[in-house]
Amino acid sequence: MPRRKAVISPRERNFKGLNGTQRLTPAPCVVTKILRQKQLADELHVSERLIRKWQERRVIPFIKVGRAVLFDLDKVLAALEKFERKAAV
Image (cartoon, rainbow, N blue to C red; front, side, top):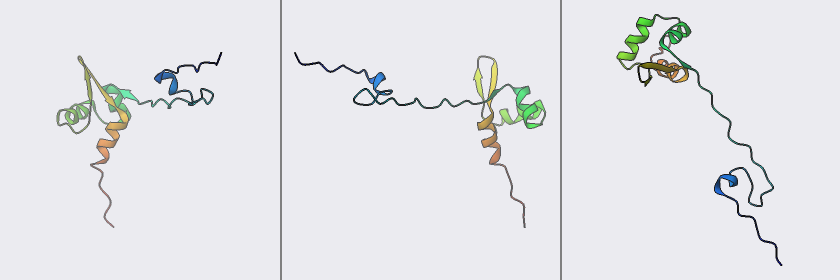
């Protein structure tokens, strides 16, 4: 009797090659630094009041979960780079 081929689910196909022998590594997990208002103020060496002003004026991006306001450090730094001025030579 001929041997039947094993059925590979789409999820398993992500980790196995077409013949089932080659194993692929999953994509690396991206870790972002999520901070509260005080932590962000300490990280940027500015006051908490200035962080609140930037938040109200939508200068920096934030995440609101219930009453908690959180900031992704990478996104905040990218937003603040828009305001960087080059020195005149």
